[in-house]
Length: 230
Image (cartoon, rainbow, N blue to C red; front, side, top):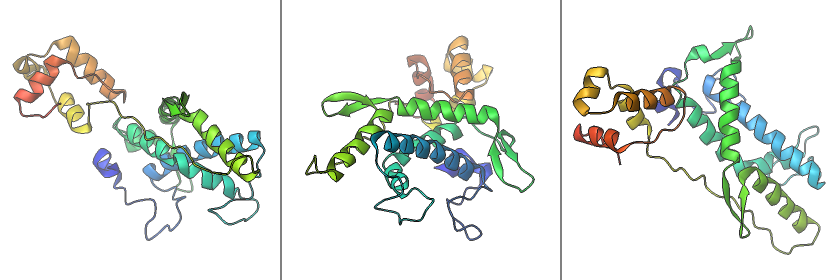
């Protein structure tokens, strides 16, 4: 997935032969994921402190002061939100110039890239899903799941069940469709009978890394060219 969206980055994975730890800061994709996970860690730690649990005692990670094993374990519940946000970020056609290389050759996000990534993370955590017969944002659900753990630990609940919804991806503008739309030039637009302002607006939104609505005229034109667009 990452290599499809950002072929020029040649992403091998979170670990490789040179760097065995996930904190590989010498690659743009890993840098983006690390930054997102740091935001998630801060959110989870704040909620744990609010509820009153001890962040230094965990279940999945060993106790090793001054680390926070409880934070690391609980953030796993929502790590996928960061992964999806990073995929959305790469859909904006990031280039190596969107990152900074420090004197120690570490990769850092440029301010504009950081701002865009934070917006996508916030947007995904603000999506609402059903939890205990009510609608909650994903951010609030991180708090509620930690509170459920607290009730179980203190004996106020005999059963512990975390609620982790999948992200609802309501879109039909997949990467292939977006690439096809971006490849349409003025001559091709006329051939496909797509309104000029419609195409301009869609290409503008794609360049900004935003989702787009596939209008009927665009869908018809793409389908006529056997460019599948459902």
